[in-house]
Image (cartoon, rainbow, N blue to C red):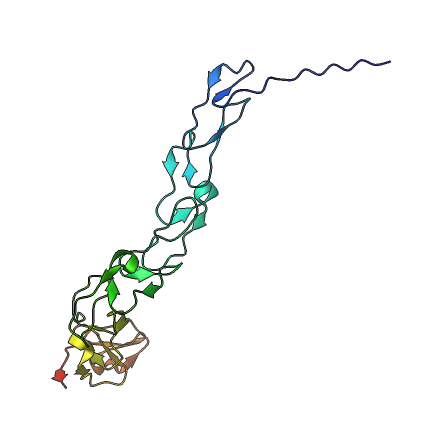
Length: 198
């Protein structure tokens, strides 16, 4: 006949560790303390010896190893990864501009622009800034146009040139350089622009 004796260590109360459960745990932000060693296991959104450091911007989850997938800025909840949209943007990934007629944080503010006038989806200002168009000023001017309301026509003389949507300044497409951008496969070089108002 054998006699088996089990010696069970006491289960320490929350916040304590060690053989006699007399040492206080130093874990912060809901970190879990190992009852033998006192080492902290951090919950999602926290790192550090005592779980004292929040994830850096753009990271979340256990060990802060997940990357936020948010558009228009990498801000997400450090624990869950849920995107925190900047003013003017909405959707699970902050990838959609506010609906026409609304703007600002969470798209809850109403535009006060005259009928038919665009409202900037971020600021609520009436009319789009140079280089932008659309009901919420979220679209860049179409190629070949630039300026306020995209109503100016680019006058770039070469075939390998693009026109800056804000200023109308002509520049070489990637891979081209030289006067009129007629020399190939080198970095972009800016040239003087000619403007024409339609």
